[in-house]
Image 1 (tube, rainbow, N blue to C red):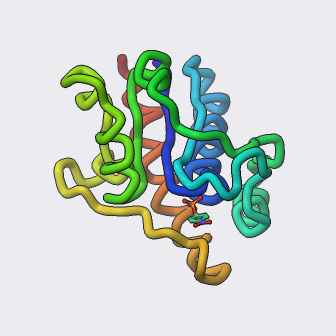
Image 2: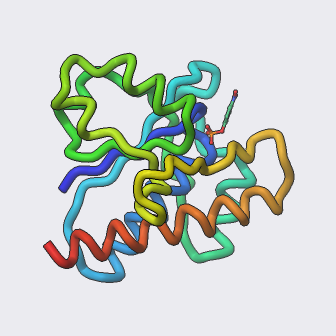
Length: 153
Ligand code: 4NP
């Protein structure tokens, strides 16, 4: 299984999702490939936002090695599942899809918790520390579902 997490900047939500899912896979001794990417060019090549690093670190997860990179068409070939955080990411990814097969790989991350409801992981970038902690918990619950579905496969 190869999973790509996508958000706008690739410095807050999707690097947290990448780190959290990798941590769960390691803990459960499961093998899967996990990466993250974004669309906003401003932060490309940068490490994750300090608040994202601090929030995951409080939960013993280190995401400092991540560098923001853009989503590309090839990601549809490289990954089996593409999870987006919000409707903006959903539209951005869908606009790059080349065919129905590509489109079928894309879903909202929180549909793991409430299927078909397209709930969003809110963008914490312009908020404070509380926003990051709330986002952490939403992502963590969804990643637990993903890890368990890999385990049961
Ligand atoms: P992210 O948060 O999509 O969770 O990484 C953002 C980071 C940066 C920007 C927007 C959202 N930005 O516009 O620079």
